[in-house]
Image (tube, rainbow over all chains, first blue to last red; front, side, top):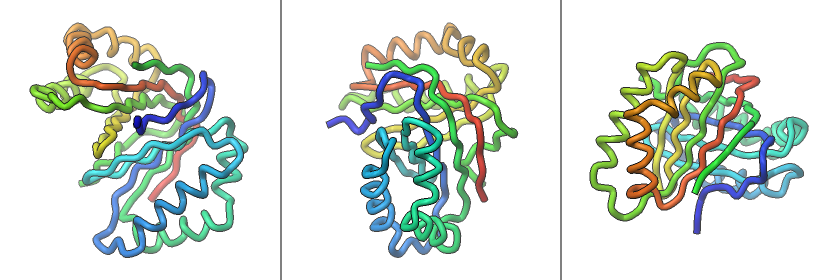
Length: 105
Length: 105
């Protein structure tokens, strides 16, 4: 099975979330898995890709900016974001981008 | 040291390269490192972030589409791309996107 998201023809949106975890990651993996499950139920969700070494990168794909805004404002996601800021992330950067072109094999 | 790229204020561009490697990865790591070194010398290069588990994700950041086009056409990079297609990548997807907004800690 490919872990590469099966996104539609552009344009669509990518949220690139790059992060470093703190040493204490208790509860993080369960929350991250729950957020993927919850995100995938949202309107406009197109897919997600994730990898972590020293740096973690999660890219989620969305049909439009409104869907991204709604997901950011989702109540359960808000709680997770707060825990992330307070507890899990040493640093992070979120980038909202519009995919204009894609290709692959 | 943070591995999160220190990108300027948007807008700028992100090339999201998601890939699965074949079993035989001989020579891949050296080439990947050389390509990061070479990319960072190109006009318009702003930074790169990378992580790999089962899936590999490399996001490179660029000031404009022209710089991305020039990097894709770079002779040494072209050789690497050809080797990648023939030998290393079981599958990949490249997405060219325009970063419209970013935030972080």
